[in-house]
Image 1 (tube, rainbow, N blue to C red):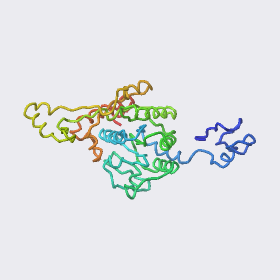
Image 2: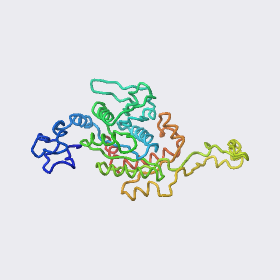
Image 3: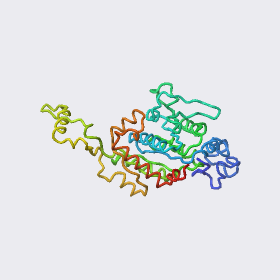
Image 4: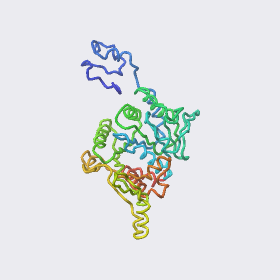
Length: 355
């Protein structure tokens, strides 16, 4: 009976669960929901009113979703936040992955704590224009497991939305856990009255990931959240040839490191090869990958990001890949995706208007 909807098994002349006469009128006699309706609180949820007031200061709200875990969704969220902040936008990054909060590490904020003021909870800031909120800041020990059922998770998400004082934001990026579970339903319902710009969905190229992404797209369509685009992450390994390790298989089946020998040969005989980038398909994309899926489901494709060990290292160290000149494969790909996101959804107007 979410949002006052009439249950499917209700009596024919059901007045609705939010009506003052719910569970008490003659039409409710014998209904299996009579007791629930009679005792349920009536009227709008006061938390939703408080959330709407907080979110009134946020111009754009973007959800970052994935159908499956381990596809690099949080890495993308972190780098998107870094990129928007570098454009001088006021950016907030909200981590609602309650059981697996990785955003504090990816923003270089491990060990930080939340502080309260008379205005509410204060985000932890990377820069003056990039604030972060996560349950990771609330755990006494980073190794502690969060073993919560749905209602408690939903309660914390509500608290994040109504009690965190972000100030004026151009963008609030919400990093959600994989799947379509309690956290997703909760964030959509809580932000329903405040206008969510849409969701970016992150996937990897192989079918085992795309199967779940299709469910994520269907979820967005059912709850009325616009799909801003799909990002195909880990789309082939890409790194400088000088960062590769070369191994030789011996007669005994063991691997012997011959990297120095290979590099010496290249330096002596073909030094121009040292400037090349080596690429290799890691996941099977013979099914057409995210491009084909987007075409079939009628959603935008934003682009591909290669599996770049230097991007992984930047995420591990809580750094922006855009400030690392060594991320020659991933940074340009991410930049192109973010520019496309800005242009196709009207966000670039914020720049041209000087907002």
